[in-house]
Image (cartoon, rainbow, N blue to C red; front, side):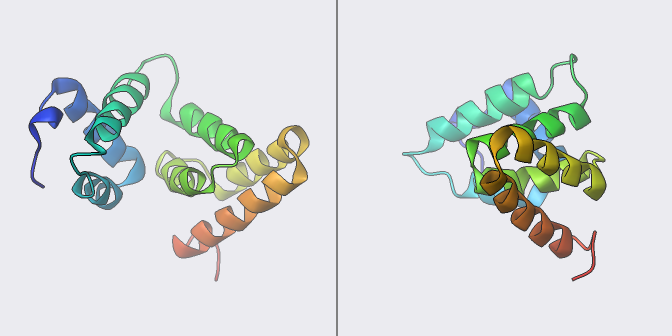
Length: 134
């Protein structure tokens, strides 16, 4: 993967490592390969501050961060990021049953339409990942 001078910081490298651990190398490589001169600032911000700084803080375990992300992304109705973080949650050891419980909890506090959309996405990903039968 070609590097850009903007990405040659310790915090960026720390963020890339965390992103790879949680989201998988293939996703991170595609994401970084898609960077152009226009969107490089967003990629740098997300990688350094979200993944390099916050995800590496010692105050919460990765599992807890994944639980929180799933719930917040359901509440915010962000299905693209939600799907990505379902895979990350699985990588962080959260079970399909625990993910279902997050969706049920969100149904009460975020609304049934949000939960139905989330469950459709969860089911698709769990089937794609071979966690539940197709």
